[in-house]
Length: 137
Length: 137
DNA sequence: TCAAACTACAACCACTTGGTAATATAGATA
DNA sequence: TATCTATATTACCAAGTGGTTGTAGTTTGA
Image 1 (cartoon, rainbow over the protein chains, first blue to last red):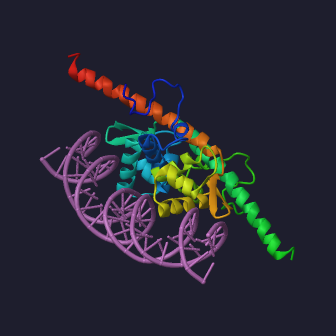
Image 2 (cartoon, chains in turn yellow, orange, blue, purple; image 1 turned 135 degrees about the vertical axis):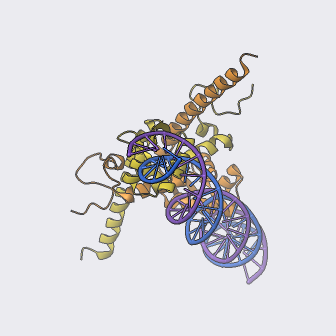
Image 3 (spheres, rainbow over the protein chains, first blue to last red; image 1 turned 45 degrees about the horizontal axis):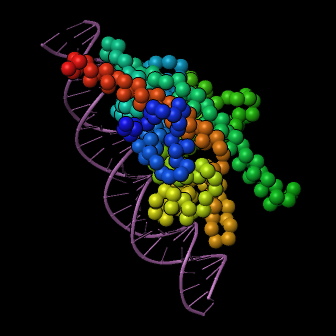
C-alpha cells in the first residue's frame, strides 16, 4: 500500500508537523507547504489577492487596482492559478480571476492579527528601552 | 493623525485585507505579511521549525535532526530569529532555539489540512480523467 | 477584412537567495 | 597555554525570481 502522497488513508487528521517530531519525514509535504507559502511571499501577489477579496475581477481590473504592469500581473496570475489559489474563467475577450478558496482570507487574517500583536510588543519593548535610556528626561 | 504603522488604534480587529478592498493600502502591512510567508517558504526552514516542535533544541541537535550544513542552519536560524519565529537562549557553550509562538503550529496544521484536501481533489480529478480516457478498458 | 482591445508568452536583466567552504570567536578542558 | 567543541560570520557561486519590453494570439466590432 503505497502512501507516498500526502493524504494518509488511515489516520483521520494526521499532519506533516506531527510526523516531523521524530525525523525529517515527508519532504514532499514540506515542499508543498513551502511552495504554498512562497506564492504568498511577494507583495505584488498579495496585492492581487487583496484586490480579489470583493469578488472576481478581469485582468484589466486587477491591473488598475494594483497599478502593476500587464505582463507582470499575467505572470503572477499564472503562478497563483497553478498553485490553486485563484481560479480562471474566460468571458468573451476578458479573463476573470477569483479566489479559489476563501480559506485564504481566514489564513491571512490570522497571520495579520498575529503580526499585529508581534509588532505591538516590539514597539512596547522599544519604548521601554528608550525611556530607560532617556531616564525620564 | 499618522497611521503609518500597522496597529490601528481605533478599530478593534481591523485587518489589512479588509482595507485592501478599495485601494492598495498599507504596502507596509503587505510587506510584513510577505516577509513572514517568505520565512516559511523554504523547505530547509520548515525542517528546522518541524524539528523544534517537541521543544527547544541546540544548534547541534538541529543539525543532526535536519541533516543540513552547520553554516546553513546558522544562517536560517538567524533569519528565523529576526522574523520572531524562534527565540534564542544561550546555555553555556550551546545555544538553544525554540518556537517563539505556538500559533505557528496551528497555522501550519491549517495550511497542511487545506493542501491535503486540495491534493485529494486533484487526484480525484486525475482519476476521473484517466478512467474517461481508458473507457473502462 | 481591418483595427482595436485583452491577455499570454518569450527573452532579457538586475537582484536576491540557498548552500558551501573557510575563518573567526568564545567557552570548556587538560 | 594549547586544544577541542559549539556557534557565528564572511566570501563566493549557482540557481531562481521579479519586472520590463516586445510580440503573438484571440475576440469583438466596424
